[in-house]
Image 1 (cartoon, rainbow, N blue to C red):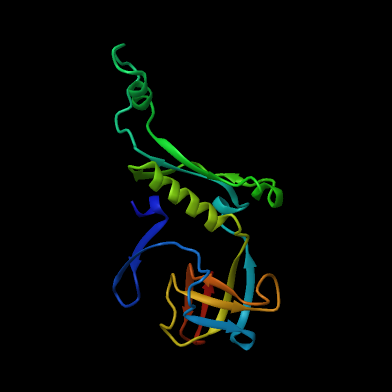
Image 2 (cartoon, rainbow, N blue to C red):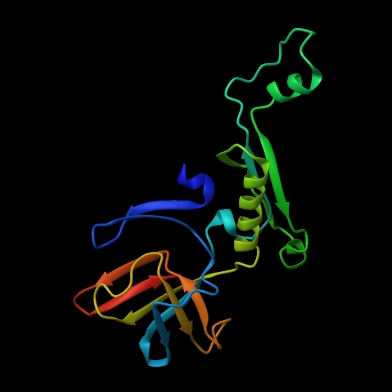
Length: 189
């Protein structure tokens, strides 16, 4: 159910269950700022194959029909026959200008969801397109940090004299590996 709305659920290191929707880190006050001497190692990595190259269209299902029917009596209205013949209806959000920068931009498979209303599915399709249309890389970096200061889904600001990090960039942490021996943490955002 959470995947249908770009959401996730999991336990924080404190043991508390956290449920949320993956959102852009832009405009969120970062939990930490890293730059210059904080960064021991950094690498730019491609996005997962589902997002590389960036998608130019998202379709989100709504009004799922659990019993598809195509053999109906002639007295059933055409609008009802059409509805019953399809498993889902789709809200779509697309931006073909993504194809200018990424000619092989993906047309993602429809997202299975359980929205009842088209407006709600449209909102999710629009949100996904806005979130992923400008994505082009992940950053894996190692920093000195006090244990338990950062957790998955936190937002950090990373400044580095390469790529698109020269003026600082907000990143949402999607992966982390701690090394207690070196008192370092490897973050991916």
